[in-house]
Amino acid sequence: MSGVGWVSPSEHSVFADKATHARVYQMTSKACINHATYFLQSSFTPDGKTLLFTSYRTGTAQLFEAGFPDGEIRQLTGAGAIHPFSAAIHPSGDRVFFVRGGEILELNRRTLEERVIAALPGAQLGECSPDRKGEWLTAAIKQGNQSGIVAGRVDGSQWTMIPFPRTVIHPQFHPLDGEWIEFAGDPAPRMHRVRRDGSGLECLHEHGNDEFVVHETFLGDTGDLVFTVWPKALCRMNWGTREITTIAEFNAWHITPNRAGTLVLCDTNHPDEGLFLVNAADGGRRRVCLSEASNQGSQWKTSRYALKEDFERSRSEAKSGALSWMEVATDTVYGPQWTHPHPSFSPDERLVVFASDRTGHPQVYVVELP
Image (cartoon, rainbow, N blue to C red; front, top):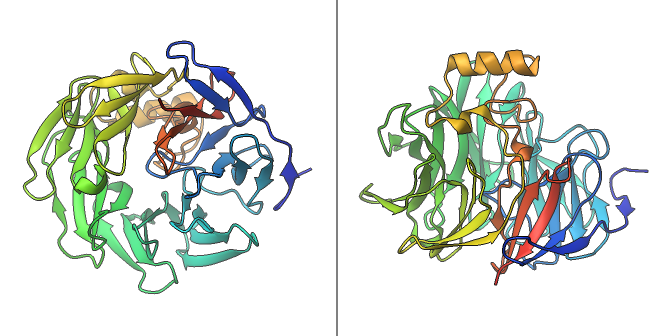
């Protein structure tokens, strides 16, 4: 059985990582796609007691939650399929933002009631990203031939579209100044910023297609940016001066800093040596555990962004319609995204959530940090 509010038994098990002997909790086991929220958001509620994840166990992408470490699993959504990586938990923990079709919605975790925050007919929307206080939201948008970002209040007011001439992904509010939004243009040049009222649009780093800048985010409360030049280096950009410095030279992939900005959590690929914690001051790193994920995506074998011919080849291989940054399940250029670990911290930063298809199906895992 299934449906909104349906509760099923725990799927929890525990094992020791083969490389580091860290304790790893496997939180899901259904033979289907299961994964945590996107690496730019925490999958845990602020109290650390509940883990949010997306699962296709009912046939479409829906939100579920599980008590950590071995609590029951509860289905949170059940209408049309959601954007599988769109969920973001409100700082209070009592609400979850997510995307379904051309709508941004809010889910009350207690009552399971949904409220439409913004409706954008005919639009494709990326993942939600709230500001630090949970008062504003932003998301990437593609509506007809127009790309850009949308931003507005959680109460549904003051929503506006900020146009951009190329595909946009991963908009994020500055953690210390919620007037600013950083976002990625695809392909190069990658990093841009704009005020949430649409003013002050500027490129932060001019570069070409052969400098493969990816997965930029804020370095915690430092307010600076941290990003990967794939597959060469983990780098930092000063938000004020735009000075770029190298933290470490290695194949850091998806990155998530701790709140203080002293550590950067990452996965690796080509080769996949596991998940690592990197010291932001000196680049020293230590392995957390293995991922053993398949890490699919042909573009990660190269050191440049995908071009038109890469996507045309991907469409042919996937035997699907036109691919976009929304269609994460069929994209063989950069995905499928559910084959990537996408690690993120728990609120107390003592645990790391990640995904792995090591069993043949993507499952959700939590590993303890020393």
